[in-house]
Length: 299
Ligand SMILES: Nc1ncnc2c1ncn2[C@@H]1O[C@H](COP(=O)(O)OP(=O)(O)OP(=O)(O)O)[C@@H](O)[C@H]1O
Ligand SMILES: [Mg+2]
Image 1 (cartoon, rainbow, N blue to C red):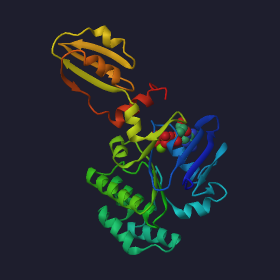
Image 2: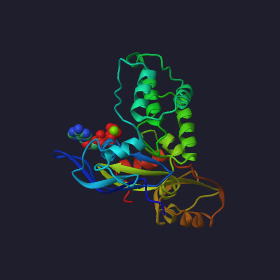
Image 3: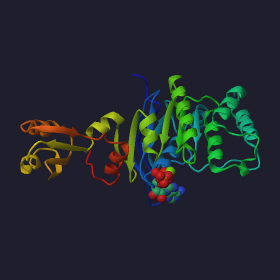
Image 4: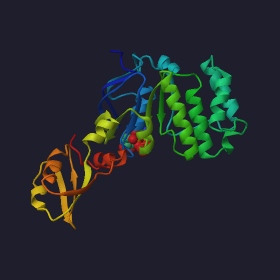
């Protein structure tokens, strides 16, 4: 098996007595789009800064591209694209001056490629950065993370401020780069976006990883809503006693409930009666996250 692109071992950061992250064991595989999610203050930005050696761990360690995040920080940053959460750019420069400056620092940057990124994101590079809107600054931030065609791109909330059209263009860019073998680590609060572009997600809450899984399998494990319409009255207690069934109610011969795990028992019990219709709306990542964020799941 290929070695992971990111690997952390009991990675822990305290800011004085304030908890940043605690005992993170994280692995990101080559070529995947890994979504990193969690409520405000959970530790996402802290994790990203540790990976890029912008802050030092209290204990534990991180490896990026097989190198030690701290000892080989410089070599890592050459091969990683990074969009910080709080972007601060050189205000007096124009977009093209900034990208040229960063390109010179990086070396070997293809100007045509930079121009094509700017065109796709409709980013006017002639304007001074201080006169740009928030979304247009963010576009510049994304472009600078991509210009040297890095193997790994780490993005801290990339699409805040981007309009829906630009978000779509950004998603297309991510998919194209993934097809070329680029790995992405993306922190986000935009759950529909994560659902669309990420292969796996890690959920961090109060500094600890509470779940890491493929989106599809997270969805399969989640609490699902179920509605069964019967032709005639059915005994509610029969359903209330089934394993995994929660909040069962009956109204006008319609049973509504939530189910954790397999639906098998409910469906087989329902099949003893005349069923007119079964409705189970698809769970969104959003609902799954609310469960985790609120500490409702013991996964
Ligand atoms: N420089 C700092 N000094 C002290 N505490 C800090 C510092 N930076 C972060 N923290 C604390 O560490 C915890 C994690 O913060 P972090 O910025 O990593 O969260 P986050 O998941 O990125 O949140 P958000 O979604 O709001 O960006 C928070 O409790 C925060 O107050
Ligand atoms: Mg953050």
